[in-house]
Amino acid sequence: MSKLALREVTCRFGAFTAVDRATLALARGEFVSLLGPSGCGKTTTLRMIAGFLDPTEGTIELDGRAISAPGHSLPPEKRGMSMIFQSYAIWPNMTVAENVGFGLEVRRLPRLEIRDKVDRILDVVRMRHLRDRYPAELSGGQQQRVALARAIVVQPDVLLLDEPLSNLDANLREEMRYEIRRLHDEFHITTVYVTHDQAEAMVTSDRIAVMNAGRIEQVDEPRALYARPRTRFVAGFIGRTNFLEAEVRGDDVTFDGFAIPRARFADGAALGGRLTFSLRPQSVHLHRQPPPASDRAALLPGRVVQRAYLGEHWDYAVRPKDGALLLRVTARPHEVFEVDESVWLELDARQMAPIAD
Image (cartoon, rainbow, N blue to C red; front, side):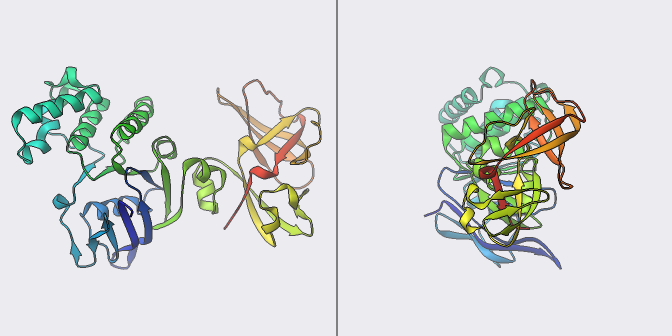
């Protein structure tokens, strides 16, 4: 049985459909991110899970029991969930320890037990030495740790996070991604995390649900989502990619100016008709001389049209000799090619993912 399940959940505001038949199941202790651009319905979905909004259609279940349905929803305070907002929402007139212990006070736990639980969770988030400080005396990252500690200390059935790192600077945001994952690995709380940042989702999640225009387009593990996207939107939203139009003709898959034997593709026997492939920039390799022939790679002559040095890698735009394609290629810092230099492109057909438009 799933810990948390959304079944054909729809939410409408008048004529506008914010969430359209979303179906998603989380195993106990799983961390799933809802990833997508602004306005795609991810926060609306989170608010329905929390009980702040009722679905127009469909149901949400917790441990097999319906907690949300049209006209009948369990109140948020009876769902056993904790939610962390963008603004942290910690009390400015309470110390760190008082903020963290607030939920335990509401549950009327004995005072000594509250202190023990608070000190233990402050140790986990590395904040015990600041237990008597007020929020105004803390950095943004420290305030976020307080919010996390307050949410976790009550041992919720489900933890909900709504873009919790959006107010932090880039370096601190990167640090907190790993902190959130570390806390999840320690407590194994079933977690739903909303973000528009693909890096956050990739670092923190067991699985990612990519949303677009109210619909869940694909749910998968981060690596599978990146390597084998199923739609053009997912391929373009998760990282950078090249889109290559193709047509299967006999034993070959023909592109603009070149062809690759169908047998070289993963699941090549299933390919047919006209289709589009996603090819990641780092799956294309550049050479000055043609490398040894390979049963899985296609070699094309080309010319460097544009380049940019980004420190960790080069970003090249390369045009194959025949055809109008322009391929984006990511290369390591020492792989230096000049603009207008002739090169050979090596394409690995097994890393080309067919996608639906």
